[in-house]
Length: 341
Ligand SMILES: Cc1cc2nc3c(=O)[nH]c(=O)nc-3n(C[C@H](O)[C@H](O)[C@H](O)COP(=O)(O)OP(=O)(O)OC[C@H]3O[C@@H](n4cnc5c(N)ncnc54)[C@H](O)[C@@H]3O)c2cc1C
Image (cartoon, rainbow, N blue to C red; front, top):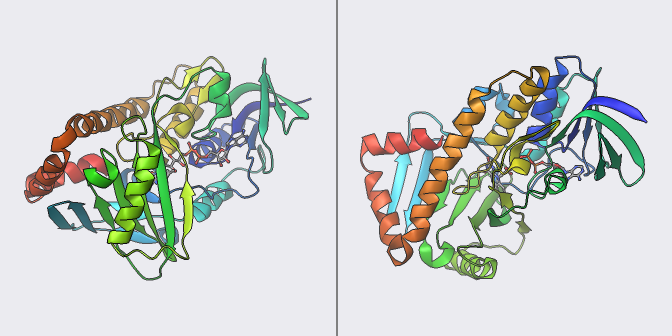
């Protein structure tokens, strides 16, 4: 049986970032990815400014830099233009390939078509047959994490998301839509990519059943004349039920740990930070992670906003309109944009 210092399950942003940072320590690392290709993931592909401050992402990976945005509520629309971009659009396939290309190949092994199928005392089973042992195991295996299930941590807070990738070229349309009638306390988005628009919506099914979201979303698409005939339809959960990330010699990173935002569904940045911080903790047991505290606080603030949206009930659309009005104040505008990006 082969032994690795660290086995990382999942080659998403969290797993790849964890491997990149760990790789410099010389530890032997195995990354398991169940898919046949590294990178692709159901996602709208929006990176906030913080992620660019964390990593030196090459210019050619940034499909659009968003400084013009539209935020819509039923009776009001905000057209925002900022001096600097606050959101950057990436293609998840290209982003994953770039992250993988940066890994130190001498001590890091990446295996595709390799699904973690069992966890036992300090060893795992891959694809139901091959055994490998580990000193540390990192579950970076996303919203439906196998490692998290092994730790018996149920996911009680999640978003249901629906997304169409509508083939469109040359559009830089970036919109956020707050409309209680269609999306309840959730929201919809339009994010531009080089060859398509990501048009999607998200809500916690505890607050608004998935079936109602689906009906609302399709009505809204029709009312807004979106042609979905050639579009690819996708759906995937977002886990925002954080219950810790260090469990002895097993760690959870990114969405496996429930580190996405329950309000916006943003999770790439949190995945990158947690991957990096877990690597540092494995290298130095006494490491105290300030960035983890920061992302936990960031997510907590977003959860509070989500709760206000939920409890606003019949007054939700009035609240949304008030928010749009507040955007007219330069001070509030800057505060909100800086808080989110
Ligand atoms: C519709 C939608 C839109 C989104 N839009 C945005 C956005 O615009 N901006 C943003 O920041 N976030 C967005 N998110 C969230 C974002 O996609 C995730 O938070 C982010 O990808 C989490 O990264 P991760 O590395 O933790 O997990 P993932 O990216 O999910 O990677 C986990 C990897 O583990 C692999 N895996 C799973 N199980 C196993 C197993 N048993 N064995 C081996 N491999 C396994 C998977 O194949 C996958 O490659 C969106 C999510 C959805 C669903």
